[in-house]
Amino acid sequence: MTRALAVLVLAGSFSLMPVLVVAQVTPPPGGQRHRMELEQRLHAGFGRAVQARLGLAPEELAALQEVMMSFQEDRMELNRARAVVRFRLREQALQDMPEAEARRLLQEMIRLQEEEVDLYRREQEQLLQVLTPLQLVRFYNLRESLGQQVQELRRGRGPGRGPGGGPGGMGGGSGEGSPPSIFPPLR
Image (cartoon, rainbow, N blue to C red; front, top):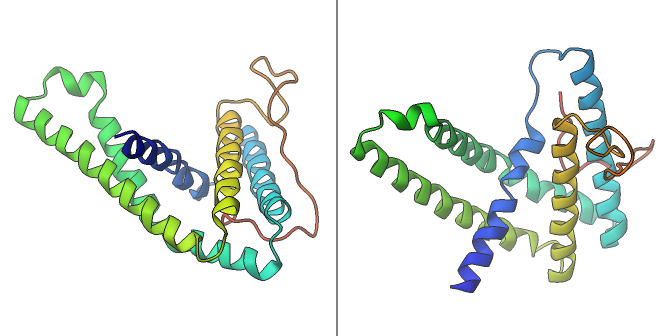
């Protein structure tokens, strides 16, 4: 039971991936454009951090990127389905929901959790073809940190800013000549 719970918790942490790779179609207003630029720098810094902290050669980083990209579409589809469920869980939608629809919603929630665990298992198997188990754990740690930084940006706090806009956040890095990011560029 504890192992299954741990798998579900780990799988839940991977639901951030689609959020991190969503492309923007229309040009954002000035403030959002700045936020997107900061996110792009975080992604580039993530690629450099992964390569440095895991001690990857350029070929290994490219193989890691290939694995991550191979699961991107599945993860984005899962994320869209989860967004639909979240939308259906709004208080307004629940007020007039018939019991049969509530039952279907509960079944959908379980199906999505199972799908997420399956995706996590398949992704992990592929990642273990590129990384050692210790490298993979470190990669997950780095990815979680990036997800937290991006969420801070989306809440209106840039890297290096705390809740009031002052110091205390989780800084991000950027630089020229960096290896490619694990994630595709945001547009």
